[in-house]
Length: 249
Length: 328
Image 1 (cartoon, chains in turn brown, yellow):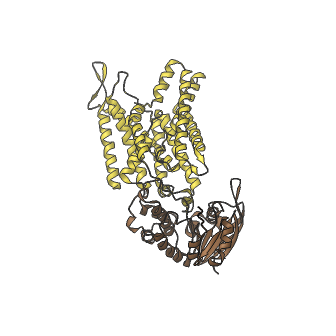
Image 2 (cartoon, rainbow over the protein chains, first blue to last red):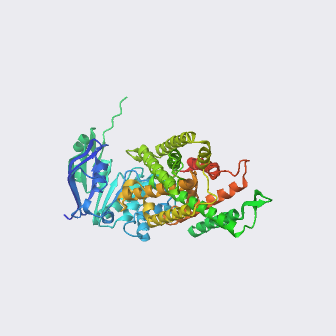
Image 3 (cartoon, chains in turn orange, cyan):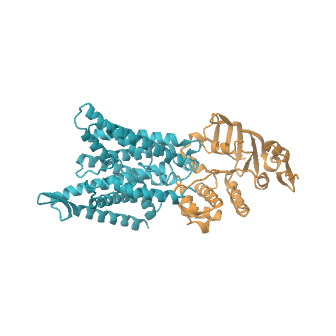
């Protein structure tokens, strides 16, 4: 397997809290990895560490075999892009202008910008101010910005990219992410384990900052593993995993 | 849109300049009165230097406001609202009072500027530190911290005023209201001109990074922008411009808020055009405010320019506060 990204023995603290403890992973070319786990299990911390935003207390991150911290900011911006959990735009830019900001380190390319807008279903809304878009549309603008930033042989890190996005748009975005994973690799943190099982090739389950399961998505995202991670019984119905719901009188 | 916007702002600046240069004190039978006239070449030179000073000051305040709005990702940030002008004013008041107490020779621009720079940097640092939270800078906390710190420094300046003799007190009080020099010292103009030119060139050079800096920290950091370095640079630019403006004319409010907003409406948010448009808008605003005060005499002479900008800028700030929802 052609290795795109790897992390070894990551230990990361956020203030006094140990957010990641001895986390290691390898992501090969073509992998679409779902990062799953309960709130505050370390999903965002893991993605932000892999993006080079957080510096681990211990451990290393490599991208295409090179230590991440040794890469210049420009090289890093060509090798990976991040969609954060809460994207922000604090100036009256249109969707198209925001997506074009992704090209800062790599040079202006309006064709790539327009292609990213089309991929995220925003072609018709390209000239609308971001502040006038719905929450789901703004989330898609952030995804489009990341798609425009890097080529097909790069790593995409997406932190809960589907929050606020309607199911139809999620269904349209998944093939786009799969296509990006074909040439590079994509890591997506997500709460919906059933959806993760449906679209991801691989999965990592985090609990309390530790990896409790990792491997191929279907084999990893099982009801027993997820029940333990979420502290709530999960059940598998027709291949779909969801929390058990009991409505008492 | 960009060319038309900048042309409109330049047109406003030219009109305001023409009005200001054509209007000023003339001597009639030994008495001074204000009138439109065709000034003599010496009067033209004097008024020209006053207009040049006002334009530079407006440009400095506008660019300082723009730098702060990017630095703090807050559309309501500007040196006066964040207390930076009051902090710089306190620094200058201390220098002037100290010079009086120790019978030092008349304090030159260097001394006042030193006090203003220390006061501005200390205030900006304090306000940013006070508004920090785990999530970054909380916009509400930032404005509150700026208002409170600014009030404390304004009160401290008043305390200094009470401790100095009557003559110096009057000078300090009128200077704290924002006093545009009628005959600016040439070296003051040079320092301000060099600072404004350097700040504008720097911001133009970093225009694209300033655009990216309007995204969330995580997006900026992974887009190839060195956010820490950019913020340190903007801190220096905003602080130096605000300090120089205060040393030149005292604390003048709201130009740093109104100029970038007016410019954004005319040329859009991209900093490549916005920097120049803000510079011209700030210049036009202050020269226009200087024109307005020439026509208003409340019996004690012309109004301090700070009063004119506050009367016009305060309501603008409140209007922006109600309608601004940029953070998406």
